[in-house]
Length: 87
Image 1 (cartoon, helix red, strand yellow):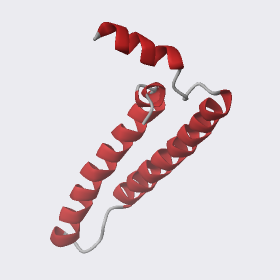
Image 2 (cartoon, rainbow, N blue to C red):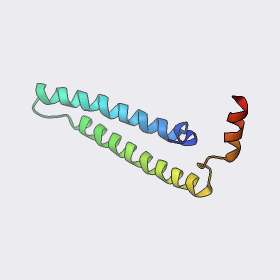
Image 3 (cartoon, rainbow, N blue to C red):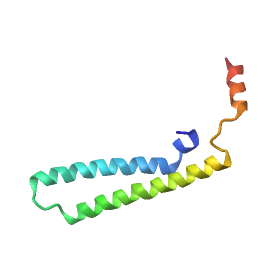
């Protein structure tokens, strides 16, 4: 992943969303074996988390497409010469 996308807020929010879904999914899995009915709040919270990750994923895709079309993701030739001069 390019550095500009790796450091973006959207990527960090998506990662946080996945952690949220994993934690909530584990709680839901435990609830499945301890109770017959999963609470409505847990189902809604999980669906909100899925929507959150999905919407942020679309935003990341749009942002990445914009950066690609503007040429911001392509490497400059100057970067190669600077790294050679450092060595």
